[in-house]
Image (tube, rainbow, N blue to C red; front, side, top):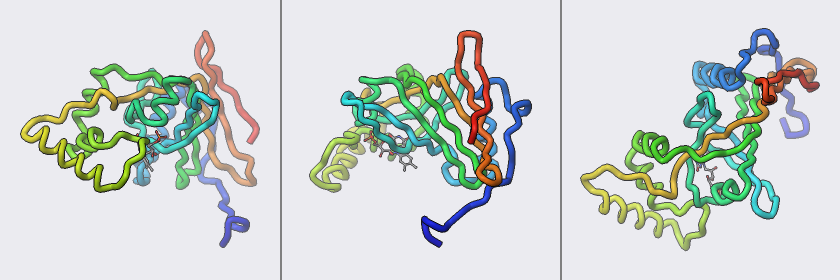
Length: 211
Ligand SMILES: Cc1cc2nc3c(=O)[nH]c(=O)nc-3n(C[C@H](O)[C@H](O)[C@H](O)COP(=O)(O)O)c2cc1C
């Protein structure tokens, strides 16, 4: 099998407008729950695209760590490459693909910083090693060697010995407040189902898109 010849036929499921929830964020929750129920590995892994000050796009994976009526939340360093890009241009796009379920969700909207209280609350749930990692790593910036970061890990481990590790101010969450959300379900003969929701003053407008 090669990239030119491999072909997957889709046909597990279908998207019926009537069966989809009116609130697309609630529908994202349903699909995430189904992905967890299917025991997929990291079903909350999401590709996040940002635009930098020069208008150049950049894409990377982050983990969805919250989902409520506002939107989809993730955590990162505010001083990372993505954090700097978002500070300049809050419009972002995100995609989650669940290969085993033949499903994709696309979101487009604005990234807004979560409150310090929300970021503190999430940071407190992280394992101590992950918390120390947030102190030790100046995410996206260059470093002379791995050893330098490991020394920084030891330094912060000692500094916070016997106490809770506080959240660094440079680390925290964003919520993507979506203006557009699309649900894609693979179907036979590449005639896939695509249902798009667009945010309008009166609420969410829903339409079917050609595959
Ligand atoms: C499966 C997976 C999950 C990841 N989750 C996160 C995350 O939740 N937050 C984060 O900052 N980086 C996460 N990363 C690392 C990012 O992809 C990226 O390398 C990092 O955030 C730096 O990106 P930037 O330089 O564009 O800011 C994850 C990577 C993978 C492969």
